[in-house]
Length: 608
Image 1: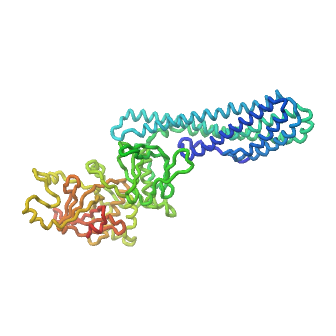
Image 2 (image 1 turned 135 degrees about the horizontal axis):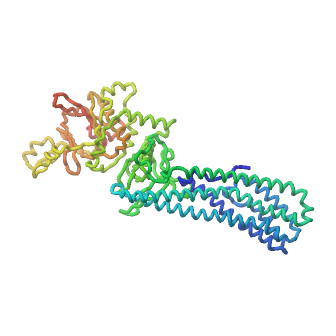
Image 3 (image 1 turned 60 degrees about the horizontal axis):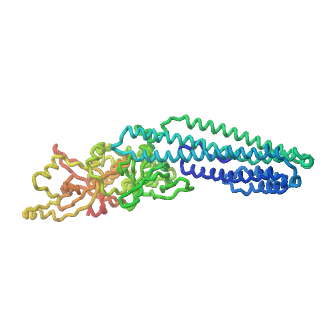
């Protein structure tokens, strides 16, 4: 007999939309079976009660048996033997239509009672387990919503522990109810076969045993057939017992695991993060605007498919496209005092999506997976190997300093979070040929630290703001004599830029050193998930180049143009610009440093 469709108990804990969709098919099948069972039972009761109308009742029974083939069962696989058997029985019942003999006791015991037991026991059990499963699922959703609203910085550890225990209890309760519900639905696929065959088998045997004429008429040709039907039912019952035992063992194995799997973010202290993912799936909270200032969060199932991010609600057969990930950017964000939030921004920066992960490991892996997909690694022949190689190469190429995390709170948040991850993917195509690897070491020493932020020294800040007058960073003064003295500074232009990083270099003879510095700075930011950038105003005058704080107008750093020995814009990412500065040391030697910026305008304009 063909295999019976069944629900996988291993998928009960994840409770994915695919599992819910398959579950709805089983529920539809159970509903159809319930309707058909009620109809069949009514017909058999009429046979039992309508003794004086036996001919009409048996004729209707024959028709009802033939109707089983026309039932639109969602899971009709493996019913061919049942259908053919019922068709044969329908022919027998039509021939027995001429025998109007009372079969009250035998019909009540062997025909009506088994079907009533099937309906009252098996079908009612499935309905009850369904209600318990839905109740447990709703409780789990409520507890997860409460857990997701825990504050990020001012959280109460006792409250967090209580809510985490509540989530674990609700999740365990849902897992147990779903396992019981799945087992009942799987067993129903076997029981419905015996439930359909057992009553009509008893009816036929009762007819032959009770009626001598029926026995004389049908015994010779029915004995072998009834024996084969009995053997088929025994085989189905054996398969049911084996499947029930296998499901029981699987259920015990699934429930014997650690309770930590029910607790969200259980591995927060030491998560095992896979940074080479090129596809990812799981539940996330999505932020949506419901008004001018109001927002809502909805827990949905997300998965990646090629270069697309898909979203799927429970009960939906398939997911829908929610974001094209090619060349997009992903960055960690602080949103409504929630933990583990990140933002996906389209390449043109016009649309963005804010999501919240359940735990730290999911949060990190989603960011890494989207970053890998945005580079279009999935289009290669072996995407996993490419992702591993790129991450290993980037880790070996850089050794970033750790002061950025300590100083991050003192740096104003970027007003424009453009696509850092897109820049990383574009930096893969920097004009550095493999044959020139020895020259790269001559440009930048391996292991050179990278500075990701500009921190203004306290003494310099005091010097710029000492007294009642504040120094104007644009070189202007209220004194007319000062205006005439700084007349040369009026030839100036201001650009909005973001500081990406700086590092020491060994040579300034070629602009290749700028391109290599760009590659290492961007690779370091991608590896260490550093996505926030300091926005500044870059003022270029006829004498100097200054980076100015847009809020306080304080000059963060200033260079004389005569000390800038190289400058260039990226050949492909037009908004990247860099320059090399030569600085005199106290010892009398000169040091070279490369600075990398991202401009709102094309880098060529800054160079010009």
